[in-house]
Image (tube, rainbow, N blue to C red; front, side, top):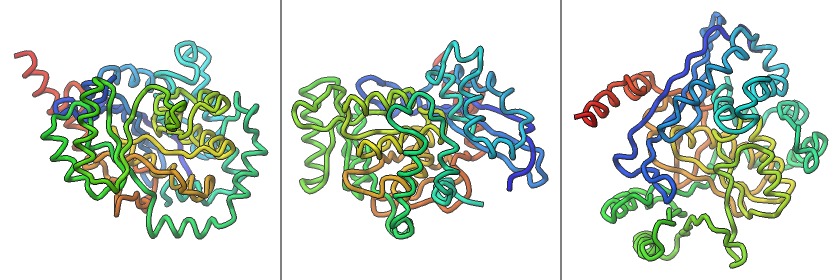
Length: 391
C-alpha cells in the first residue's frame, strides 16, 4: 500500500550531443541530439520514496516540454499517492484535460509529451499481476469505444490468462526478441557502418535508415547485407506506403494518441504497430493501444532507442506478450545501443533478446552525475560545446 503526498516536482532539460557522431540520424532528422525532459517526484513519506519519469525529444524544443511539465505540476503536487493509485483513470484525465492547457494540446503535442513524463515490483510484473478489472480501470476509453469497450478489454485479458504462467517463465528464461538500428543510421559514413556493424553482430534482425538518396540507399543496403550475411533479416525503413507491393507497413512512432492508432487500425492502414513509450501519455494510454492491436490481430513491434526508450518499452512489450497478445509471431522490439550507461537500471540484452528487468519501477532513473553533466545549457558538457561554437 502506498503512503504519502507528492511534495516536490523538479524537471530537467537533459541533452546528449549525439549529432556529433550522426547517431539517430535519418532522412527527416539529420542532426538529432538525443534529449529528455526528466522529471523527479518526491514525497513526504518517511521512506524517502521518489518517482522518475522521462519523455524523449531531439534537442531544441525540450525547453518547451519542460515548461509544459511545470504547467501541469499543480495537478500533481500535494496529491495523495493513495488517491492517485485508487483512481488512475481519473488522475490521467486531469493531466490530459486541463481546461486551459488543452487549448494548445488536447491529448497531443507538448502537453501530451509532458504527461508522459509524470507517472517492490518492476512495472511489467506489476501489470502482469493485476487482475483484468483493475488493469482496465487504469485506461481512459474515451473516443475509442467504437472499436474497444471496457468489457471487451476485460475479456481479452481474461482469455489471455490461459498459459500466462508459462509465458512469464519463457520471458524470464529467454527474453523478448530484439532488432537493432544501431548499425545503420543515415548519417554514418561507410567506415562507421562497418565498425558499428561488427559490434551488433549478435543480433538477428537489422533495420536500415533510408530515404535521402535512392542510389545511395541501394548501395548502403548492399554494404550492410554483405556485412551481416544472407541468413539475417534486413529491414529498410521507407516512409512511403508499400502495401500495394506486398510489403507490410509499420508505423506508430509519431502517432499523437490512442485515437490516431484507432483510426489506423480501422482503416487497415498498417501491418505492424509501433508503440513508443514516450510519445503517448503514459503507460495508461499505451495499454489501450496494446489491447486494440490485439483485437485487430496486428503485431506490436515497438519503437525504441533515444534516451531511455529501450529501458521503458521493454516493460510494455514483455507485459504484452504475457498478458495480452500471447504471441511472438512476427514480433520484435527495437534496440539501440546508445546512452544506457547513463541509467541506474539499464536494459539487459542477452542473445539478441530483452531480459525482463528485476529492479522495482519503470527503469527510468538516471544517474545523478549524468543529469548534472548533460543538463542544458549549464551542464559541463554543454558549457564546453556552446563555448566552442561561439569561438
